[in-house]
Length: 113
Image (cartoon, rainbow, N blue to C red; front, side, top):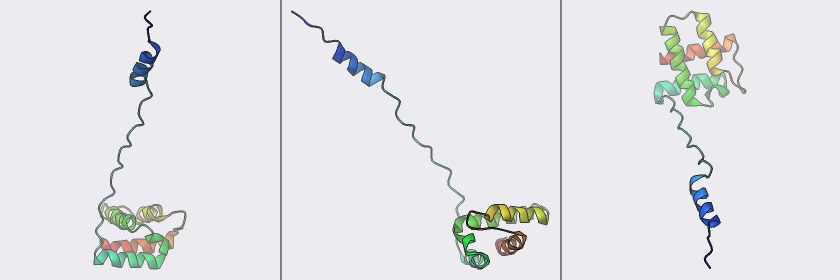
């Protein structure tokens, strides 16, 4: 007497074809702009740190934001808009940026322009 063994074969096929899709592979985030830290950048970071040590928690971002402020000035944005950008770029949970601090940040950033 011959027995058909269909159930195990069906399970093998189901496991091979009908299983859940594998987890998606995360796509890499674009890398931030490369930041070189030379003597000018070190001086800028020191000036920024003297304004508020929290401003240099992320040194690379601080340098990128200085260049962003330089771009704003070069594009002819008015002073109030540039100060608003300085506030937006540097404010964080640990750092508050008022207009006086934004003026100091901008003055420090101009050393990299």
